[in-house]
Structure formats: structure tokens, C-alpha cells
Image (cartoon, rainbow, N blue to C red; front, side, top):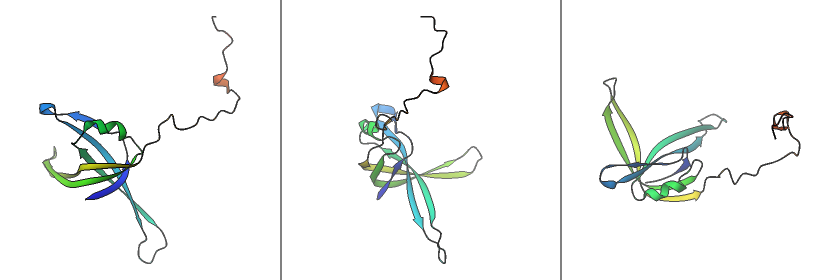
Length: 129
């Protein structure tokens, strides 16, 4: 399968037994459609949990806001919750990651200065030096 979406939170690396590591992250997939006999555009966001077992080094590139194209398969996790009910979740087991747009870092955003200081930025008069 192939899915494309934006990473909603920086990826995290989990260490498991026998020195195995997995990179976990979540993407948001945006879709839109017009219902029949309507002019209003409906938007749907689907959040998909993803795991990547190939290389934990990739986690440094999987930052919030990055647009990624993922290839892999869907896995189903079924468990009994604390409410004694059966629950399930889907995980996209990623075999290949293609970064379409890197996340913007705070350093990339220009800081705009107006040239005037606000009251909180003024130097206090009672400095000890």
C-alpha cells in the first residue's frame, strides 16, 4: 500500500529486546468531498499510527509537519481493554519512506523586528552593574 500525509508529532525511537529498535510516528491524511446535492466541501482527517523497523536513524528526519509518502502494509492489533471489552487499532508497518517536504524548523522562520521595544523589553533602571 501507499499513503501520503503529514507527520503530526516528531517520531520517537523505542528500544526493544535483542538491540532491536522501532521508529513510531503518526501521520494525518486529509481528504475532502462534496456530498450529493450540496455545494459545501466536507473535510475528513484520518490519523494513522506508523512503525518503521528498517533504520532508527531516519527518526531525525521525521519531524512534525513533514510531508511523507509511505509504502508498506496495514497491521491489526486486537486486545482486551481495562473495561473487559475487545478493542483494536491499525498500524501502518512502513517498509519505505519518501520525504516529499521536510518540516520547517524554527531557524527557518524569519524573525521580524519592528525596531521598538515594548515595556517588558525595556531595561530596568535598577541594574546592579
